[in-house]
Image 1 (cartoon, helix red, strand yellow):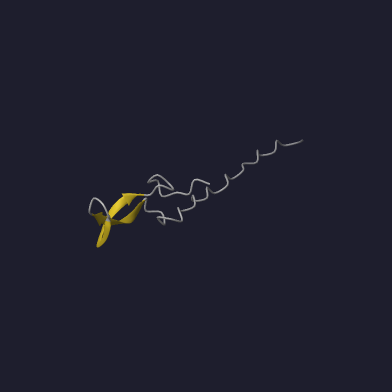
Image 2 (image 1 turned 90 degrees about the horizontal axis):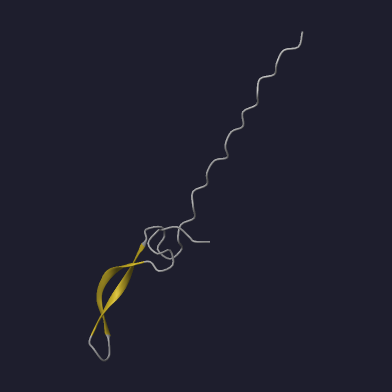
Length: 63
């Protein structure tokens, strides 16, 4: 008497973590130097946070 075979279940492939953006290192923000002055735009020692334009703030590489 032949017995029915148990169906084979396949494991799903592990989902790889998306690559981090090389410019912001996965944070989504970069620092920009603050510039003052209308004509010359002198750079100061202060910095401000800015949105990463490479990944648009997502922190993941788009490629």
